[in-house]
Image (cartoon, rainbow, N blue to C red; front, side, top):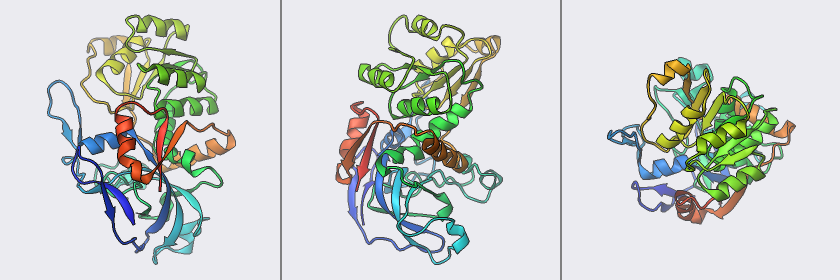
Length: 355
């Protein structure tokens, strides 16, 4: 089995050859067909998060991430073998040879949060694939249980891979918006932003005004159906947002998560509005605290999504024929190049590693 691993933070990924694992217990072995390169992978690769205000960065080691680690949490693969302890009933409609999306956001599986279906929110023992456990930057990987596999049923593996993260993340964030029938403001037109535009349309939403500092990404957002785009660095960005919205802005989804984007997002909201922060760019909040109660603003974080939402998402994609986001397939051997391209902002949409 060939994989590309983070051996040291901020160092090139290491190519590793090892015996292909055999599934034990309830594990499932899959042959990887596609693995998305997500912005979260940059944080794992770099080793931490900027907390702003002079605080010590949040270290991945402090969060329990150990090295070496095979990244990749947006994975599609073909089922090769089931472990000996998987009962027929546990396989559902799955069989060897099926192409499946891997749900990666695993927890301890035993706490009330996990049992309630929100493993992505587990605080006892997070076990996300590609973060705490080895993921899809490989030609094979094991998944702890068949219940985390969602049959693609004919969807293209390369364009479907991002649904495991950018898809379910934006879908879950959109579900937190109280009213999709008025224009929302979205910060970021990368893979997440383009995914959100497709899903918003499929969910019957009015549309989105997209803010990004990159002109090519703003053009991609317009091509994907944005109502309007705004350069976040423009001195009159706030006025442009108000004009494009044509009325009160009640919801902002910040897919960047920087001090600058969260401030502009906060400032453009009307009274009673909601700021949903998804991105992990980093930094510290700059809001004037009295304005939070005075404007009755809700500030809410949104962290990926649960398995149920992932299943709902794929059903939506099939029934509404959701257009896939732009993808750039790259050989697995180009994993380092994909990360550098993402880091430098060269990619529109998603780079997909194809072993």
